Length: 349
Image (cartoon, rainbow, N blue to C red; front, side):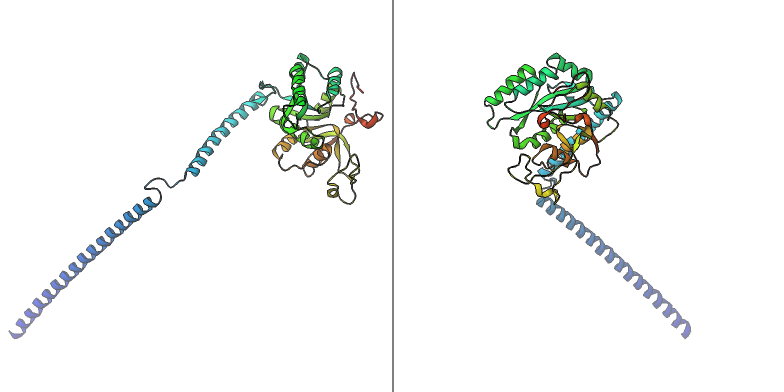
């Protein structure tokens, strides 16, 4: 009896203790849930607070992109549209066999690719030279237009502006151009003998921007040529992508200031004082790729005292085919070597 009562009391105590433990664990779990839920709610409130503060400091809820950045984005999109349009034009040009949207001097669209654009470098006070060239080998009027349309050769006298723009020198050139319509006037060039090399560079840049041609040719206004012969020479080198054609020469660099061919930067040519190989300045031709090279790098291409040296220097270090063309050389007997002779029906001197 005594032992049975004892066992019953022990069993009741054990069940009671288990209930207490279960109750305590349940309370602990409930408190833990409340704690975690409270922390999450607090974290959420903190995030809302931080977002609101960030909005206040970045424009009261508006985008933090600045006006300048927005304009850049708009400009980028506009440029992308232009680029897409150019790709379409380029593909169309490839299919049709010519480059579209190249404007001629009067603003008309030039569809057929030209063989050459020839710039006759002239100056103020040399109308006699220009008239002599018009009489000897440069077509005028409708014949000049037919030369462009039938043979793909554009020819223009090239001149800058007077230091006193609008003076009698400028007016005389404008009057002459109204009659002959055969000038390219470089509006951003002041006409001086010392800036002849710069003028040649500006002519190449202008020609590339206005005409799409295989070659760009520079000629002095005391040089007489046969156009058919010149065209034949140029056409014979169409298989060369980067070609520089002329009467190739080298020679002494003169460091004496009183010398006719004084080179102010003579020290750049070394102790030997000898120029590198380059085409004579009376007449030379460069292919389209080289003309584009000059146009693209216009700001960094240096000009020396003489235009022929300057042009030759631009192609040093570039993969260029130099062609020493005898027909581009001056007549050996002409005084001062002022004239170039080309084969054909007519040789002029």
